[in-house]
Length: 154
Image (cartoon, helix red, strand yellow):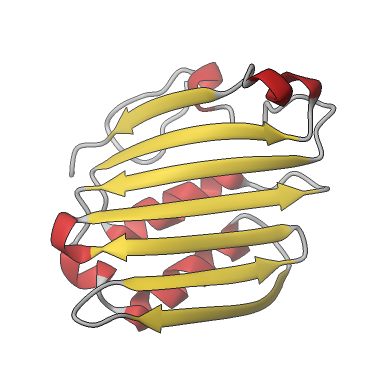
């Protein structure tokens, strides 16, 4: 079982980010973080540091990054990595953040990145969609998996 630091244990195959098909051009992880701290979601500097920390924890090679604070609220940004990108869009008024992690070539530690983001955003719930890119299965949307995970605050 996998435990991402919360009380709920996840079956290994339910959250197997590394278990993408072997013949794939890329790995795309779409994550929705709910129950996040609105102040954190509206702090551009905090979001930037959290995203850079997530990229480092994923063992990605950071090339550059850019983040923008919106008025009246919200942050969007991207970390460009040698393996592709990590992006975020936040809605502080909803306690919600949408995160996109796309990698080509070497597999990254996606689980570590998501755990870092979950902790940095103080999220209570995470929904993940895994999409293998550039495989015969994705021509017909086979192999797509949506997993809903939830944590309780300690």
